[in-house]
Image: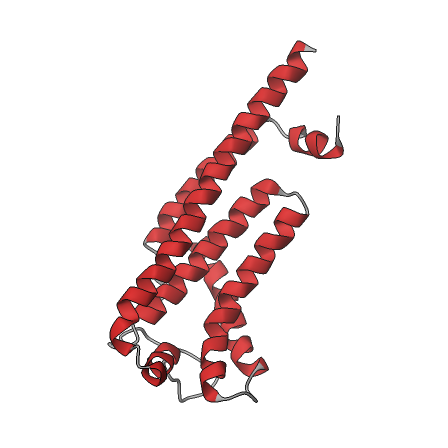
Length: 188
């Protein structure tokens, strides 16, 4: 038996099923998550980390032209979660990768909502200084894409949702594999 199979088979099946059901719950909660109005402690905590990464990303590239500084926040937010996803896959922590995928979904949904708010600028904004600018109003305004804010934001959210659905399907596949491996082991 390979080390991966041994590690994968080390927990009872019910742990994987309960975990997967929890991931389904998170998926549903992410679909309606709004940073300015959330009672979900888990998603609010993950978003708090994302927000910190967003702001630090602005600071890291503050020497660049303003449009790059503005885009760095959201790009850093999504990239951070993708790096976590990459690390979980590389470590072969497959159920952790489902969680990381859902975190990526959350990041993409939050960025998509922020993008779609570019024209109306109704979202309450926060930042490290008293004067806070709407990154996507500035970016889309500079690019002449302000009228496409809803389409672009919706597309980013849609990609995030696809990532989340793929993660849940992957989890089901892992459970089926776990069941098959258990049956093979019991036959031996």
